[in-house]
Length: 550
Ligand code: VG1
Ligand code: CO
Image 1: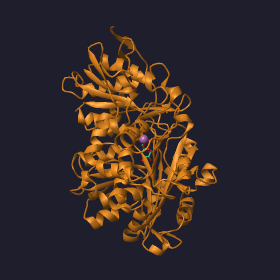
Image 2: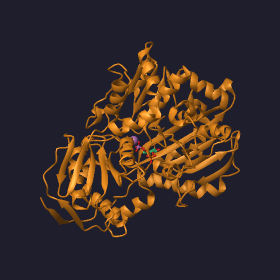
Image 3: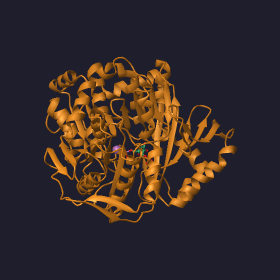
Image 4: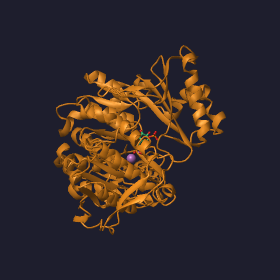
């Protein structure tokens, strides 16, 4: 066993996006591609210490969503870590840890940080995507300053330091050694389950299952399976088979683990049957997203956040009330209405969980959410799929009401924010950039213009000043806001790996309870037409409509 110094050449484009570095597996498997990125990360982390050795004597957490290349990448990262001063790695058995579990382990074990191997909701398999992201000591995604520092260094990196030790047995719990570094293979579920026990009334949930409450959780052959099985079927007594597609597979068994009604159509179909379970849910590749579904009734993520906020006190972990709430800018303003009534501070951040970290750390907010099927709280520093499922189960247990009745009551009280997201995938990058550039150029002349019954009152490119550290993030999405509060938002995805994806977000508010039961797409058709008129999407892309509307 020896530490080797190996020359290397920089790769272009190793810039992390909305959530880590995501590329095709075929990019990651190029010689030194993963090594370069990890070496750079370790260099930057080391340099963050006063002596240039911040990692010396420290612990890192490591695990991933089990997709193709996960196991190989784990071995490579261990050998790099061992050669770069890391004292100990807490590794999920089999290289498995969900994103929220990494966050929980970092926090509970006071680790220096953690590395998550996942491209999350992106497709997996040899022809799919792979990804890597770093979470800091608070358990949350690295901030922009760190990711930029890593990117800058990838462009000048010349040397790798790596151990030539043989592979460790990642399937065996307990201690092993590489050079001077300890590898502690841990149960991927234990720390996470302990956090859930602290937040939820497990006796209440056990009682529900005893009385025959029926649940279907679709883990989409991704990493949420082992967690949902251990907690729902193992600890809470849900019948075997409650969690389906529960084995993490390297290619997700061909499913696209991006939980929305389109990709999780099998779950939707089950929830529409006459013998449908009481409650359904799905998670994404790394188990940080959730979709919750009632009998024949889909809940939008924006509404989910609003309802969680309204009912949080019913959950033991939040019985003393919330400090505040935050949502990403494109997420609907449904939660804002609840926050206003409850007198809670409400923050609007750019897309991406990293922007919630400071607010959570500073004790300014307790719940956060994104329109992209992500909700979470101060219990970790990531969004958390199974947590959301347990939250919704608890709401039903505590109120004795169905998902549909809870949501409809919410609309009656607060009004309904009709909401949809239209994704235009695989657009040529230059076409997408020109569309955004032209929109940006039009911003000064748009306010005051009339579109049907609506007047446009604000048009801007969303910029965010972090209220805690003062950092500014610009160009976070074009917002068109109308006099009735309706919004049309355009942004380009920062997680895709092929061409560009344009996301168009449409929202309007309906206070009249007699008009709250319309199908969503027709209810927002006028706003879709405004978007087309302003941005010329179909003409520019040649696409008659969105690839996916959720
Ligand atoms: C998407 C979502 C965003 C989410 C991000 C990571 O980003 O829109 O809300 O935080 O994915 O989620 P983008 O840049 O493609 O719009 V996950 O579960 O893929 O890590
Ligand atoms: Co995810």
